[in-house]
Amino acid sequence: MNPAALGKLLVWMEEQKFSRFVIVRPENFAWLTGGGDNTVIVGEGVAWLEVVEGQIELHTSRIEEKRLVEEEVPGISRVIVYPWYAVPEPGQPNDLKYDLTPLRLVLSPQEQESFREVGRDAALAVGEAIRAAKPEWTERELAGAIAEEAFSLGIQPVVLLVAGEERIFKYRHPLPKDRALGRLCMAVICGRRKGLIANLTRIRSFGHPQADELYWKVLQVEAAALDNTRPGTPLNAVLLSIQKAYRVVGRPEAFEEHHQGGIAGYRPREVVATLQNKTELQVGMAVAWNPSLPGAKVEDTFLITEEGLENLTVDSHWPMVEVAGRKRPDIMRT
Image (cartoon, rainbow, N blue to C red; front, side):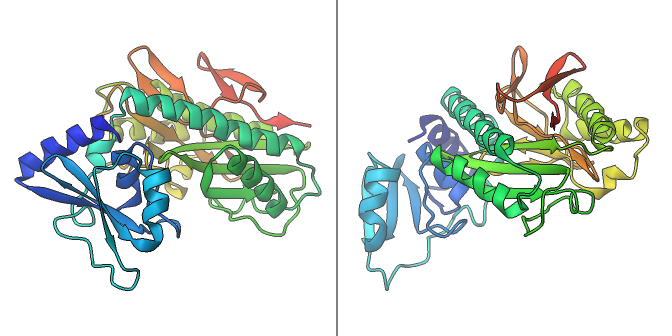
């Protein structure tokens, strides 16, 4: 269990005057249990938690009871089991109606350490697969290699995108197809373990003539975002710095072509940055910015600390370049 999460939830329940509350959504289930997974089909819970009188009860079917108790929520105080053919609807009030996202945004020290571990391994999984890739591989072959590496480390890809030379200039969200990688490829993963999702993007060039210029521009945009990612700064202020940076590099239209990232955690983005969102960044939050152009994108997941930004998705084997005083992933060139 996650004592910090339970403490936040109990305070919130008292403020809302709720004597009990039901947790259904997978991101909240993972948050409250310290990484437990209530899904079989991705995104759909097969169990829920009821918080009552400071205790947590697990509700599930006979099918799932033993596995959940032994592997996902050991130490649960009470289990209520239903026949598989007569599972009732979760009670009210619940997190399908009430948004608990604000309670999840500041990560406890335990959550931060788990995030470091999944971030490191997610970066390693992507890096190992891309290092092995060849221009004649298809996008699906590269996606399969990334998935294999990720699952071997206990990471579930909740988003896995790959584009080769033909499609990287067309689409921001390229689901892998049966197309050759060619001279340029991009891989994107949002990888989940213990509920926390690490986000990163890597680019490899097999001699594409435009890759360096495009990538340098997105690095400049990202530098503006990272420079402004500080405790007390509103999310929309960071976004304004990104919008300005696109103008500076001569590509103002790119701001409109894709979202730019936001606060990370138990979803790929807990909060997507918009010009209207004034959520203040705090120590203990994680962020993932993803400035992009047709043909280029940069993305890592960072933790906001008292000392500055800590990159959670570093791959020590990946080539790096210094940008605005920070080590950032370079294009892997062949």
